[in-house]
Length: 208
Image 1: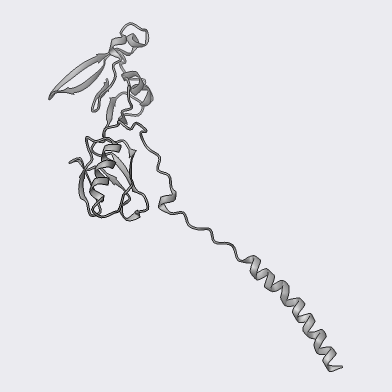
Image 2 (image 1 turned 30 degrees about the vertical axis):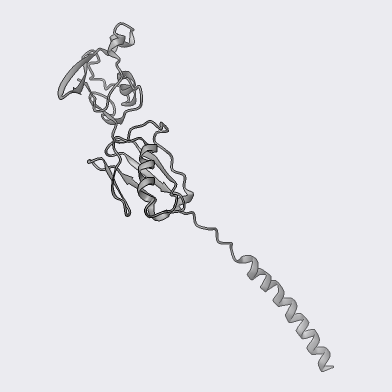
């Protein structure tokens, strides 16, 4: 009789323990692998392979399977970037593929068959400036083919006090400053289309 009672007691205890054990197994959340820096896709600020890198641009230098050499770096005012072991590397004046080739050549001393990619993540070297009676004065990234009208649009248009007939553009050419007139009302009326010129790096548009 004692053996039978012990058997049923053990069976009850076993049936009670099983759900608890199952709950412990199912209640533990599966830990997701944390994303690494290499998982993040860097979005280029410009997709133009012929873009010429300039000072203050920000570059993502990626060396495949070599995270110690991969990093995001700014181009210094002297046109160079700093990379591990390579120290200073000239970046300004080169296109992203050209810079990648230069880094590849230098890394051959330390890495077997390095595969280097250079992406421009921030374009800061090409800027134009809008001052005066515009809604949002300040510095703007110069995109290819940007005209005076497009720049004014980017700045949100005019304030109520703007004299849109007396706008002028300041441009440095060979060390000399030029002042170019821009009559907004004439241009949009089709009378002075030649005034709606394509902008260059460093141009300043003043709206009095």
